[in-house]
Length: 285
Image (cartoon, rainbow, N blue to C red; front, top):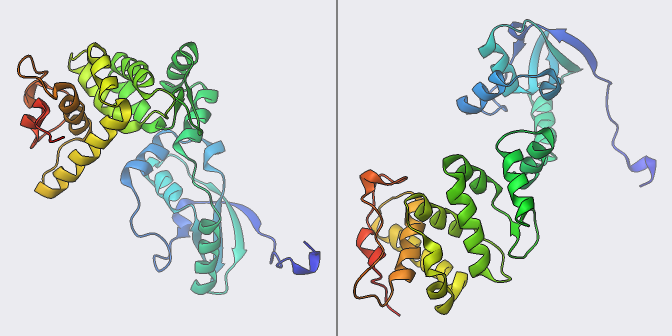
């Protein structure tokens, strides 16, 4: 691009360490709702490397934080850090600051769960490090792309690993078998892991699942069950809902010996189950 087309960068910012008490926020353009949970997490895991520098604009002798509001809140929550690094530029008024806020947030790309997982592996964090070790041993990988060895659902995988690592491992191995060359699915992982966690050995029914269409049939059943849940206006944990859908397929055509989920009060997961009876296989073909 010819240099004449480049936008002027404006006045160079000045670097300054400032007391958090001397920094203000203008809620006319800043986010009014900030996650208290995330703020506590930033405060608890604070490091100067992750904190960086606040972007501040000086208007009428008052310093306004344009970027870094949540980081500022986390510092105030801690109370033990008396000054923070700031990059300061002059402000032409709230409109100027709002434009700066917009530019900062418009061009910022959110870190995806897959990228975050890979970062945690490289940093040696747990449980990502243990998960990655097991995945490599069993020829899985967390990544984009397709194939029965590729896991797209990093957040779901971590959640279930923390709940029950053995159930999560078994769910991945079974899903690879029933998915053939198709991609693995987060909804199937949740349902299958839920069943394993509640002592239902789903791999005993691999042949039945493959015979009726494998993962394609399971996914269609889960989708139909989700729509039914919306239709009756009731909620249940998706883990248990997906488990019910998988049991519908497993129990289809059985007159006896149907596989049952344990009563809700004894099971891992939901608080309400409007489809308990449907796990018996009462779906129309």
